[in-house]
Every structure is written in C-alpha cells, then in structure tokens.
Image (cartoon, rainbow, N blue to C red):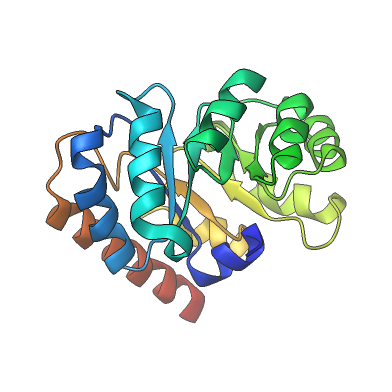
Length: 209
C-alpha cells in the first residue's frame, strides 16, 4: 500500500518515542485496535530495532511500522532488516530518502522550507513532515500547498493533539505525527488506546465542521 493509502485509512502517525521492546506489542495492539495503523519507533528509544522487529512480526500488513529520527544510511539498512517499511527523519536529507526507496521503503522526511520540500520530493519522498510545526502555523501549510505539486502529502509534527489538529486539517494537512499527547514511556496500553480514539473523534469533528 502507498503511504497515501495508509494515511487515507487513518491519518495519524503514532510516534512511540521511548517505547521499550517488552511494551511494544501491547501498545501496538491498543493503537491498532483503535484504528491507528502507522507506528513509528524513533531510533533514540531503548532497543528500537527490537521494537520494530516485534511490531512488524505482530502486525504484518495490518500496520505500517517504521523508524523515526533516522540520521544515516546505515540506520536505513538496519531498519529495513528489522522489518521496518517506513523512514521518518527530523531533517531534510535527500540521500536518506533515496536509500529508503532503494530498499522498497516509504519515506516521510522532515523539512521546514520550500527549498527542502522540493529537494525531498525530487528524491522520491512519499510525504513531507513539517517539523517543528510549533515554529510554523496552519497558514504555512496552506501557502506551501499552493506551490508544491498537487497531491503532496504534508504532515505537521510537533504539538499535535486532539485540541490542536483542527486548523491544520482545515489548511490541507493530510496527516499528523502525534507523540507525547498519544504516548509517553510507561503509559498503560488502555490509556494509549483511549487517546487514539479521542484523536480520531477530534478529527471527525473537524471534518464535519
């Protein structure tokens, strides 16, 4: 499935920073049961490759599992070998996008300027992660989408929550990377599931409005 297809199914990318392997499957179950099926384990988490391996094995094609905070081509290879199918970076590095695409992975690299956005799209990026979104605004998303190629998938990341996503959605964001307002290390799976359902309800309300 394309990244656009995954985001159409559910536009939330769960950023599971700090996730431990022993908690990964229970937290993953809670999210997938709540309809959040894109799971990102940042590489600055404890034993991230093991968590990616367990999540990939557990969910197969039912969820898109990958890594965030990817910084090097060697890490791209390690994530792919662990079963990860999604690359997310905090920065604009076309070489990492090309490395991911060469391995058949989907890529959502970070960017902040139009020049970075166009260079990443030229490298084959499937979506663009606007980061840190706290330093931008929904108006920035609207302006970017006016000049980026039609159909560009833009995902704000940073400060996204059930209370904040409405204006970003109205500006044209097709997805949202959600971290601390969805998961913090040690959170009970049931709590994570409740937050995921609250996010989906908030988006449904924004769409209806």
